[in-house]
Image 1 (cartoon, rainbow, N blue to C red):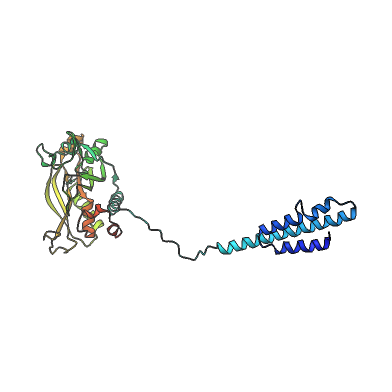
Image 2 (cartoon, rainbow, N blue to C red):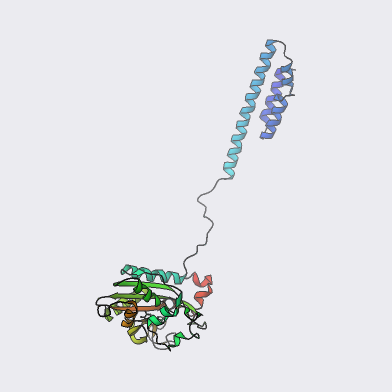
Length: 331
Ligand code: DAH
């Protein structure tokens, strides 16, 4: 074996190796157990040959290690170039959802009243006829008590037809002063059409304190109407009747479509009703044990879908339940 010639061959094989596999093959060939060099080393008899061959082995090992490092660096460079992320490229668009219009209005109304110092209380969707009717002063033969209008779960249990039972529950739970709103779903046996859905949402409000007057009611509702519909909408209040208020008042805003001149949406009146209200009937104070000589109060109950329709000109209430993104995305 000629060490010089072997070294030349080995070094050129090492530098020719373009991958770590090829390099490993060269290592096995020139430094493996059956390589010429290893066989020769095993047969060494004199010191000088031993030193020559060992020095050769070390040089080859070093050359292989260096080539290995080179290949690794080249591989790393290649991957860095290939896998580079261009952070200036626009990202993949991720469509974002948002709250349903009714939820937005619900939170907006809650915020308006929280700002006025009211508390927000939860009501119950399943109510007893006591809270839904009796305690609210509904007379025995009132049409709302009919199973044709109200969804009964059994003789004494209904899906609440309005959020007003929350008034009774709140007053039973605390002493005056009371300033609360309660928002949620209500249920009625209505056939769906453009202006009715059997489930909808209401906001109930109740204020009970010493010296509360009709003026406080009208001022509060006027503030609410302007906050919801803008300063330039006209508001109007008309006498009405509800079992649990005396006197009772209905709030109106000028029609968004015709701005008061009369169209089909407002049935040619120029006005659209937003909801009921009134001064709390003292009979309710008897039910909950409040001193009706000392306290007065006002209450109101408005539909959130109604507010959405009035504000955005949605022509059909059922649209709010269809969940067509083409409609919902607009709000
Ligand atoms: N509960 C009534 C309804 O659903 C709305 C209402 C009217 C609520 C007058 C009130 C009120 O609190 O004072 O039609």
